[in-house]
Each structure stands twice: as structure tokens, then as C-alpha cells.
Image (tube, rainbow, N blue to C red; front, side, top):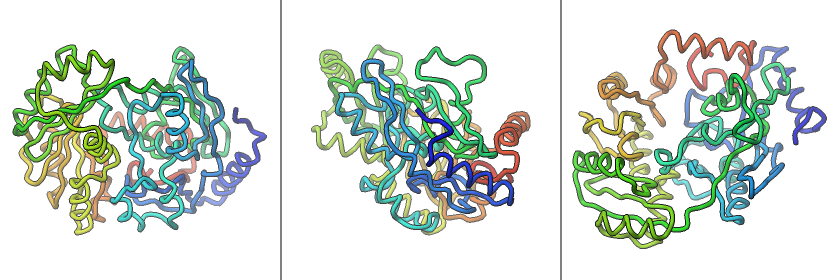
Length: 389
């Protein structure tokens, strides 16, 4: 387990303390595959990839403790050997044939990190989850504990290695989606789960409104639903679980079954954002447009936004891209009871203004207080989460 005597950790802590003393910003970086997300990275690069390796793995306890600089692919390979995995299917940007990442080189220095793919620390800091998110939960739901260096270079530990180990404010889960503004994630303990015994993917030719209706109807039934995607008049549904349950659900639902290879390509392309839809979106971003991710209630009807639309998470996550004004997209999301994030944008003005949904005043005050508590000098990833902090 990690402690203050670790030489790699000591070197990082010294860098942080020196930066705090000089008032220098630090760009905390692992694989460098998510430079497109949030505000533009700035400051001196603090590379955490030396903090690598699996510290402890107890397959029978379904818990793994891993250093933040460990490549995500390495962790997933180790889990797969024991028939386990990360249920929330985090995107594996870079190193895995992610075609869209080649467009993000302007946000990073060097290409070695991207070639090696994303890291465990970046997975937690970004808080992104894949197709199974609606069925199994988010990154935050599987984060049991974390060790981090704050903006003073102090080593702090939160949580533990069991679900019942947390009392009071669970800071470890607060790190999920924090974009590194609270501290340098050094090590995390994660809950893992066995991989499903059987899966099946079904295709249905329906329009968007009918897809939403069916997804909500199926969501109220005892079916082993694992993931869904609708785009271009086609709805795909993934079932996962016990073989008998999957086979029974497939017979009940009907539809056209996909072959194993075709299904794997479909879900991998969605998970890693490298399908044809996201390739088209990236071309729009390169031309100055924006790829929007909208979080809305599953029952929300089709949104009145032009351009190609993609639905997943049972209709709760919706994608669109183009050169639509940010105000129009966010207004449409708000009218449906949700919010919108500019996940990738070629609009420098929009990125500088903030790509995440604006916070209500009381919530923003809490966020700013947390930032000041853990990083009083504001040197860690300034502006990555929200402008000005």
C-alpha cells in the first residue's frame, strides 16, 4: 500500500510544494488521452505514470487496489484473467484504436501517453462511463477508497477497501469527475464484478419516439437489460446475465439477433467513442462545431434539436453535434429536465466559457470551498472543471 516513503510519491509531492511556493500551475496528466475534456489544459505537466502497478487484488473479495498511473488496459487484462471486470465500462481512449483521439494532439504535449491509452487515475478524474452505466452504475459507485496528494503536497487517504468502511463525508467518491482540481489521485480501491455468463444483442427498426417508448416499457420489466443505443432509425438492445435469463428475454422481446463479432464492434465503438457517429462528430468539431452530451430523464420525448442524434442509457443520455448555439442546446436540455455538456468542441469561446453545465449559486459555492480546502493556491488543473478555479 502507498505511504509517504515511496520515492515516486515523494518526488511528486516535492514538485507540488515547489509549484505552490512559486504560484505555478500544474497540468496533472496520466495517459494524456482526455485533453479534449473540460477547459484547455495549462501549466507545467505533472506526469503521474510512474505511479503504476496493481497494489493488491483479492478476486474472491471483488476488490482491486491500483496505482493511478496504471494503464486502464493493464488493469482490465488482469481482471479478465479472473473472469472479472469494471462493470461501468469506462472509455479506453488512446492505444485501443480510438480514431477520434488523433484530433486531440493540440491539447497534449507528446504522444507517448496517448499511444499507451488512458490510465486508472484519468478514468476516475474524468468520471466517464460506457454503455452499461444505466444498468450497473457509474465510476463513483465502484470507488471504495483513494489516496491523493493535495495542493500542499500532503498525502491524504479516504475510504478503504470495503463498502462499509466509509463514515462521514466520502471524499474518495468526490474525486470521480473532479478533473484533478482537488488533488493528484495516487491510488484507488475499486469494486469489481464477474463478467456476465451470456450476452445477446437485438436489433429493432423503429423511430426515435418509438425507441424511447419501448425502452421505458422494457425498463419496467424484469429483463436482464445491459445497454441500449438508438441511431438512424435503428435500436440495439444488449442483454447480459445468466444464459437462461438472456435466452428467455431474447425470445420475449423478438427483434433481429446480431452475431457476436458484430455486437462486440457495436458496443466497443460506442464505449470508446470511435464509431462512425463519433467520427462524423469529430469532423464537425474540427470545423468549429461541438459534440454535445445531454443528460435528461429517460422518458423525455425527442428533443427539438437538428442534426444527427444518438440515444443510449435507456434514453437518459443523448448525443448531438453541429454548430448549434450553446444557449439553444442547454435550453432544450433544461426544458426536458436535464443538462448539457460540450464534450468536445472546436469553439474556443465556448470552451473558455465552460463546457460543463453551469452550477446553481449554492452548489458552486460548495465546489469553490472544496477547491480552496484541498488546493488553496489553485495550482492543480486550473480551469479544467470550471473557469476561474
